[in-house]
Image (tube, rainbow, N blue to C red; front, side, top):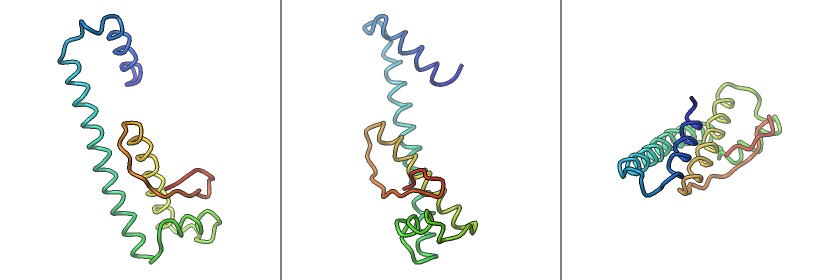
Length: 118
């Protein structure tokens, strides 16, 4: 059973009688959500440091990099691929964080594949 299937099963279980749900279930869900938010924040901080490293190394903002990278002007050097992936992962984390109502705004651009990267 996938995590999503388990969550949907838990939703159906709780929906039957919200008042009968053990308070431990509520506390457990709160702890899981806090843990996931903390994990996303830690990952975001590591990726931001990596992004800053690229910006300092190449003396170029990620926004400028994205504009150049999406047109192919940056080439396919491994650092550029990793930089693009880092920016892309930050965008994904932002989406996950926004779902939990914690906002971390990031600039966005489109990579060579056409997908939005931040």
